[in-house]
Image (cartoon, rainbow over all chains, first blue to last red; front, side, top):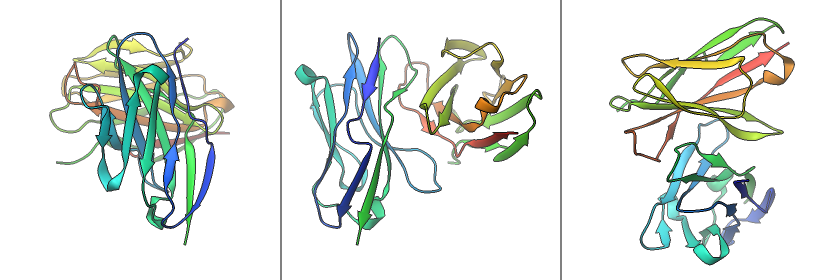
Length: 113
Length: 113
């Protein structure tokens, strides 16, 4: 069955710490990969996406993610987090045969001052 | 450009009733998808419409239905409400049939008592 796994459910970091959130997927064939963020009280926003090409993709607010096909992974990174990065982060996948986003369970990130 | 709008934002219904939620996509977007978000199950795909046709459907009972109008606006209906239907219902729009990039609205918070 197709699935998306996010390994860390809750992460607490101090400001300026580096962030890496894991995402693995179980899909056959070509995939499209996304990271969405949901800030407290706000709607889901697209952070970054990978469709093809350079496996290192850069998104908004200094986030980046690397697609490693051999590991079925699409980990999210940020070199130095800020308090305003406190949010819930979702990894999601679509396949080229369908447009429904299959989401991971999400990772709740708390950045302390 | 205005974002995806959803009405109402909050709704309280009694078990056994039915409910209709509305979504207006971003201007020019023709694809609309619906998702259910709960603490236990996370984000789950309900269905997707393009040009008034349902193209994909998630694993939900027949009590959940939807439709799309010629102006791309969409409605979803849940009949015979159950307590477990309490959730945040999210609508997302995409620019075209082949686009995997989805933009989310703020959601409708449905509480079933």
